[in-house]
Length: 165
Image 1: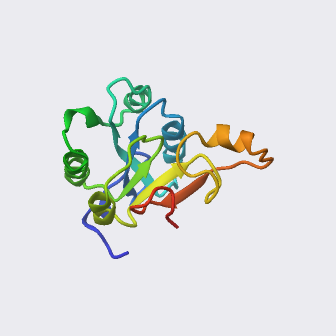
Image 2: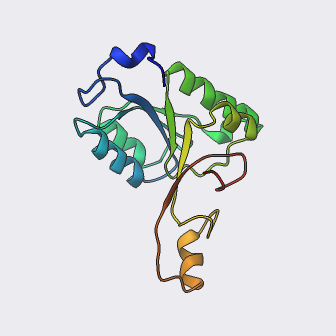
Image 3: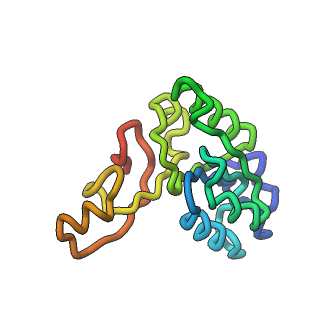
């Protein structure tokens, strides 16, 4: 990656040349908290610049506010079409000059135009070892299947659900 305009800026943890990270959440924010803790380390290569939730009552918003991270709520229910919701998300991310987006318990499927626009700058934390147990209710389905080894997958997002590298 070539030198970017914001490379000379210091991040939240004081180090230089950090990626500006946005975290999208819908719930409690436990993965967000892990990212907040990691970003507090002096040599961590990213800082969380924005947390966006699609739900007003997402408990993760309080975690972000406690860490002095800007938050924004963009309710999917305020939009008649998914494409309009995706556009509002994209505009908020672009306005914050975000380098990398992390879906951390974000419970909305994003449309192909959004995913294509942010390709290779959009990652998802999935609570199962992919390709097994794509989609929702992964823990319940893994237990029902008798799986003895569990884990999570962090992958780049593609237009199809839970298939990215």
